Image 1 (cartoon, rainbow, N blue to C red):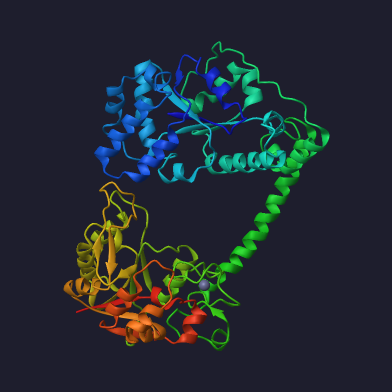
Image 2 (image 1 turned 30 degrees about the horizontal axis):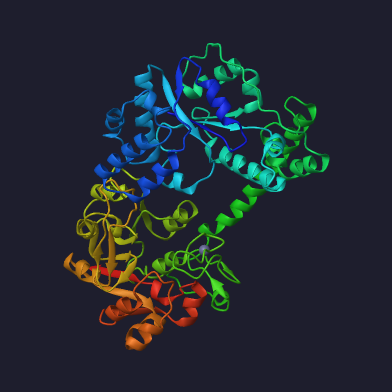
Length: 541
Ligand SMILES: [Zn+2]
């Protein structure tokens, strides 16, 4: 299927009307359905109900009779969706494939008048076979033709940002994306349609298409024109409006920009090499900190960067290291990775590390490092399938973060970890521990990879013990004080509000707590607030 996408004022509708006269394609409807469908897919996860409601929504839409309804009867709409995946792009593909079949054309599509809507992204509008015709019209004409109650500068800014962002994000592949300048297309529609043939999969031979004129707009006064030229400068250049295409000035600017890009790349590669150099030099995260680190306000135990502070906020998922990109919980995770004293080089397996590249280079220097790739293989968290292929007792340490809560059967994964670890080996596990007790969450079998299926509680330790491990909680000194401080301390602890503090601290008080960082160290490494930093260290019998 295809989408004719354009902001209000782009005259995407005129383009769609002219295109729909082409014998190989059909444009059905004005795309008003897409946002309601997106909300539906986001809210309803039960597959049978979701497909039924989607079909009802499509048929009940005001534009149905003039759009999709010209080609499909209501029961045919429902039929088209029966096996459709519950993601917006694939769902629309199934629907419009059925429209194309019924109309006897090669392809069918609709329109979309929003270029940036996070809900559409979240439910997968651009997944599957969705081709995009991105329609733009000169910003100065869009401003001149707009309602008088919106400030020209706001229209120009929105035009510039939305169109450039959409072009940058979606325009990578010429097989699925085409830029259509409304002016060019409407003045030479046959030529325009032929140029779109590769994207649409239609006959490139020219067909007679109606000539439609762009609605005339009033002339902009000089001050407004200058304002628009300035505000939308980048976009006007990128889409070939200023300087106009084929002008020598444009060619000159292109040449200059190309030169700048070469220089920029050269500068970046030097800076890049310098940024990566830590991986070839620094001691492992479990080696003692240097004097320079000990007196620095912020110090990374992975790449040994020191500075005035980490970036982002104080949170396990933030406090980013500006050099290696690690976040706070990753630094805490590796802090717990202490090899046995008598072992020279140990074998470390890490499941789905968030950091790759330079980080992996460093890890391979410190130990025999294996990373299970995070690329999903079929099932949710497909990287865990890779565990099956690893030999028994082939790892001395396993580092796993945020895997277990997203799999249907955490015990099966724990059994695999147990099998792959050598006797006496250690599993270092990080999970969001949100309460005292674990609860199962409703997640459809078709839920996207990474969707949480379990809200773990401190009682997950029993589960780990049952899998043949001796578990303890690696925490900071402050955490121990909070947990042992009783209900008073539990109530007064600070967190970011995502967990049941009294539940977690209360339950942790009776677990084996092993403090691994004093307050000063925790502050330097960014392990604040204390309640978010828990690593389960589980030794295999
Ligand atoms: Zn770092």
